[in-house]
Amino acid sequence: MIRRLALAAVMGLGLSAPAMAEEVVVFAAASLKTALDEVAAEFQAATGNTVTISYAGSNALAKQIIEGAPADIFISASEPWMDEVEKAGLVVPGTRADLLGNTLVLVAHGAEAAKVEIGPGLDLKGLLGEGKLSMAMVDAVPAGQYGKEALETLGLWPSVEGAVAQSENVRAALALVAAGEAPYGIVYASDAVAEAGVSVVGVFPEDTHRPIVYPAALLTGAADAADRAFLEALSSGAADAKFTAQGFAVLN
Image 1 (cartoon, rainbow, N blue to C red):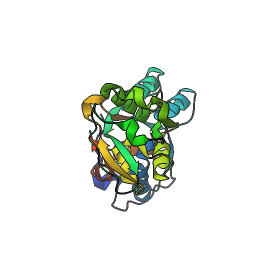
Image 2 (cartoon, rainbow, N blue to C red; image 1 turned 60 degrees about the horizontal axis):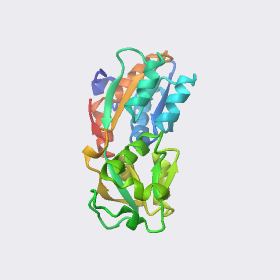
Image 3 (spheres, rainbow, N blue to C red; image 1 turned 120 degrees about the horizontal axis):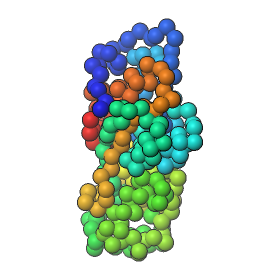
């Protein structure tokens, strides 16, 4: 389990930089970008180390890690994709922990779209009209998988399946709605917080899909003390505040 660092140890108190700065390479789910960029910036300022983050769908990142891409830390939006990396023997034992949770929401283009009640009676196809429902790839990317599962549970999937516009990750799906290229989309609550061009019109009941959990772990390629320090910093009080402000639920 990830141990909490005392804030004085890592973040926010202007610690002097090490004699030789180290680089932390993080592969992280695209939905984490806004909050994780802030956490990384504060860590860098406090330690003098560099944090390089690659954002994409958890499926793509897991496959890259398994194929040998150099990374020190993996933060997935899906437990099964972290499981795949762990099965490949690439997770340092004892370092995996559930870091965050999230909520699935229906968003619409614009800041003041009308609210809807998400349930079996929702005429989602009618809402879409001739437009598209923007989602991350429904058979591979966690946000798309959760969204498809929720729609299937509610009995809505057959009516909208042909109208789904799929993107390579959830932030790309969000961007289509923000740009007005799709009237509605299914994303995480944290994505909606990060984008002023959309509004949340409904929240999917938690019992319509598997729990949305973000596990984090140190990878076997990690070689620097800075790698473990950043993993631990993800569970600090300062990081918790940033994640919470962006709509995540802190699980650690």
